[in-house]
Length: 275
Image (tube, rainbow, N blue to C red; front, side):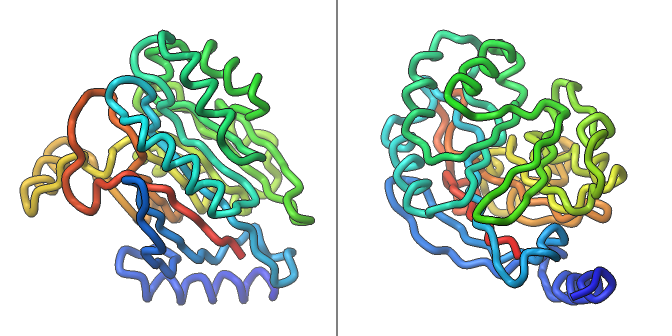
């Protein structure tokens, strides 16, 4: 399939999706307080994969500490392994406001599948970005802070661009794509979903984010009004952000002991079959 045909096909999928997203979504399972959602996503970076696909699993907003139950953390590990991904991506907020739970983070990371790649969130910058990056890298997990990385996965080559947290104004999309020859072929990780608007202008076409906790407490009509007043256009699931498809993961944890209410806000492992 040539590039022009792929783009026409992708546009057709987008027209059919309810939120302009390229997906076929199924609620695959729910276990241990974490739901699994699987999405089949046409991906421009797959044009040379000869009909094969890559499976990407995403976890976000871990918030290790007293706000996230141990059962949820354990369930996320189990489900991540059960998904059998070619790559696990972690889109930020590993800790809350300090490094006091650093040892717990090390233990949790050790129980995740590999390979894995990460980017940071606002709570990581508040907790100590340098220390959290060091912990991740010691666990063999590269951290992309306005950086890119090319990986060979299952015989397929995948380019990732990681844009640092936009909520704390550490994002620099142009720097992240500085060494990316084909920006529209890259899978982009960025914690704060509103950063996707700037990423789209740089050339990124598929962005995975988190940050919102799916709205945390979702009440019909009320939550949508509050998020709109707060300027949060992207809360959960698929969106069109400029020319980019954006997925907002509800994450698995909370920075404070606050219940998640509503299906949209349930802790989540997202799985993407790209190809």
